[in-house]
Image (cartoon, rainbow, N blue to C red; front, side, top):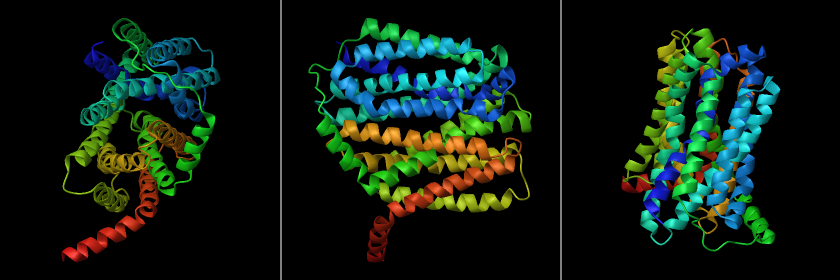
Length: 401
């Protein structure tokens, strides 16, 4: 079996979960008009997809361990594609939301299978595995970065259904390629040990650092997703820009988030704690300055300038917290990774739903204020998490002086 070929195929699969949100987001106002429904109901199709994804992350790892990676990857990709095709023919928004939940459930299986396959292939070389995981994180981020621009173009020229046809074609192609060019990567299947799983979950969920880390990351991630839900209406309906323009705006924000993550990895002279605390302070300063500026000037440039700066430092903070949180349970990576991913997605789904309900879809300023408040909320949770670390760092700096 060609390990590198299997890994490369996995890299093309990883952007698909993000594509399920971001290729579709530019078309939200068009979907609202098509079904003659409310913007709130239409927006629910994104957090409900995220919730389905979160639910499947809770148990997909265990099922993959039992049945292997290849069959589950192929099956879940086909199901994802078929659901995307069915969405094209739904008669109302309620049916669309139901199918989006099901689509989210299917995502967890191929998302986990790809990661498990990589861990199985490169488990013998820890340094090589770390390198592959970093590449996978970049590949995963390509979904939120590229999909909005592609989805905006398709939606503008071919209608909202084209984004789901894109998802279907992409997923089916990957299913065929996986079936032809890959083999099973798990040689020894596991059996279910419910007592072991229960003990692992009890240990993980009893860790306050882990829970606060998940809450912070979920809040920060919700800021990005909320731009794709509420922001889609504001940019198109209030600022009267096209789906293509919104897609480019989301593309820039995705690049800003990725840039923050890369900065966090590139700076080696400071610890994760120091970089995360520095990013949190920057978020507070940017929010305070931009809060004052937006009382006098508010337009697309101020909107994008504020969100780009916040996304860069949110990316730094998120990346640092991800490494710190997952490292606490490196002896049980499967369960801790599943719980962490699921928790982040659940927090994101709850906040995104709330934002869709309470934030005006007609005003740039209310949206920006809510965006800044969410970032501040993430910083406050992180401040509780880093309280002891901050005291340690303070003593270290005084010692240097």
